[in-house]
Length: 109
Image (tube, rainbow, N blue to C red; front, side):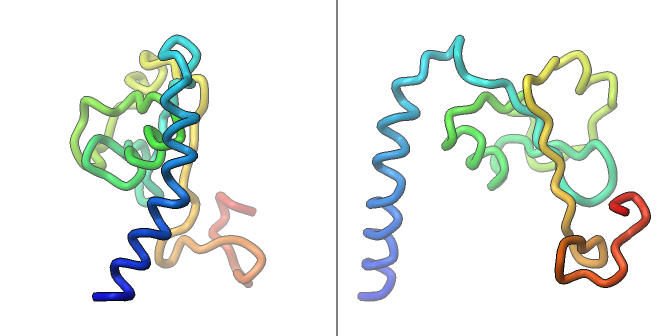
């Protein structure tokens, strides 16, 4: 229990300053972001996901906030949302990449 309490206290110590800065960003200045899950194609991070929490916690607007979980979306839907920023995860299971990977998938090469 003591470690858990300390861990939560540490988390609050890190997040409170961020939240105070983010809360000052006017909505019309927040970036609209499409954040895509790493498996398959066009799987958006909707509400109820860590990706959604990361975006909103950083002061961004998640264009997929009205969706739940990580649903597959149509590429035209992404275009219609007109995000300022597109983020794509590139690591999951056998789809590893980076300095530690000896044979990345062809789409990463």
